[in-house]
Length: 278
Image (cartoon, rainbow, N blue to C red; front, side, top):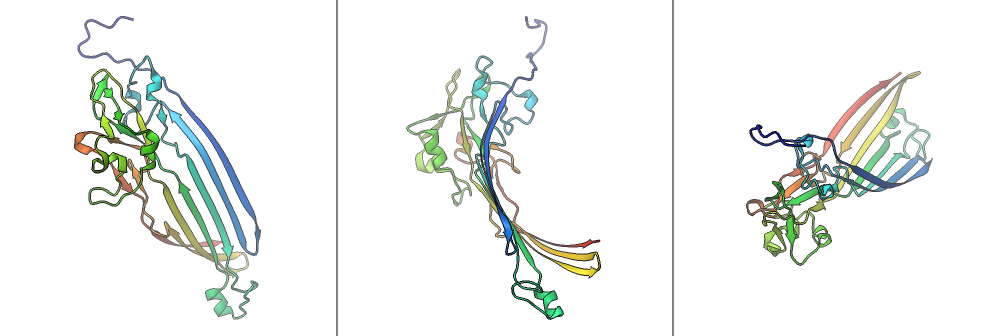
């Protein structure tokens, strides 16, 4: 194929190469209902890889490979590469009320304190992926990565966490120049490719709790009232990225060691609901 010699500007070749893989293991446990308690939980270990890391390119159709001779250089974690996920849930019929362990015969008192059920969903998962970029287009006008001096990617990952500092709520130790400015350097050598460093951000933890009761009204008609406490303990969850998407850090002099975006998960939300079943 010969490029058009009369074309003004650059020529682009648009195709759809790309690949992704996902491998996972899931284990679940369910406790049979007994004494008013239902309990269950699940754990997933997974790994997802792709040549289309979505957070950097706003238009994935316009993504350029670092090198067409070696498409594997673009290989990195996918946006759903959440290595560890743990869920547990339970519902429990509180033992107070008519027909329960602590029987309440008074209809008014039973209407107030009896017959309530509590439930909860607890979620913990490891952090979302992000890419540590050098900030210099050293190869095919693509980011040339970073240079590691005297440490490994595993050592860097072990220091990723939430550090409360005046500068930022998210300050990974090895990415902060106050600790070791020479540990990670942007690759500035034209025509070369440094290390493509992908890390995972802080983990996610959330607890939802609900309290509900069913009031019989007439024959098959009943009224259900519920109070739901979403993120009941008001636990903040910090990520690198924006609104749940994976993100990236540009490791250059202007933003050394600081994330492109820090997003705090939703604060506690309390909802009250009523339902009529018939």
